[in-house]
Amino acid sequence: MVKRTSFEGDACPIARSLEAIGDWWSLLVIREALFGVRRFGEFQNKLGMAKNILSVRLRAMIDHGILETAPASDGSAYHEYVLTPKGRGLFPILVALRQWSEEFDDHPEEITTILVDRAKGRPVRKLELRAEDGRLLSQPDTMVKLRPAARRKSA
Image (tube, rainbow, N blue to C red; front, top):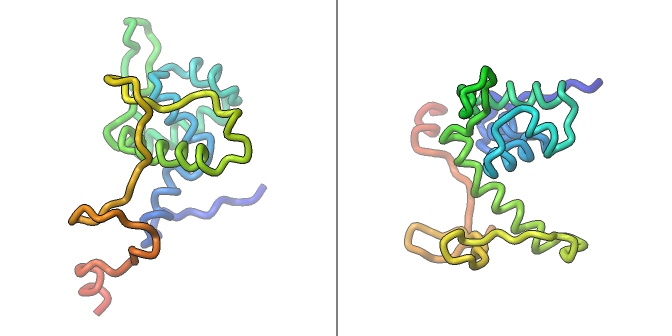
């Protein structure tokens, strides 16, 4: 079995985020948690995951502060998995992945759901990247540069 590379200490924020959510099972667990799934058995049934894989993913997401455990809401002896604010912060990422697939999927007609505004029942607008002054940005309009604090440390 190939050992997975760790990005925990990487300076790139994309690589660092992949350390916490960098496999598709984790993103699907987060999707289900955003839909209200909270119990181990519910995750397993919805996703068709093997128990050992699900256990490892849930533990990793707890370790990364994405999920936490809480007593079962029905008062039973079980516990539930609840998204933390850090976990709920992944919602725009999942929306971006969804919208990317809706735009570029080879068979968009097979996508049977749409994301709608709960209050109005209307489809959600495509996510946009905007400058501080409100201008719409695309990739060529952006660049990555060192933070001022990072420059001071390396000098």
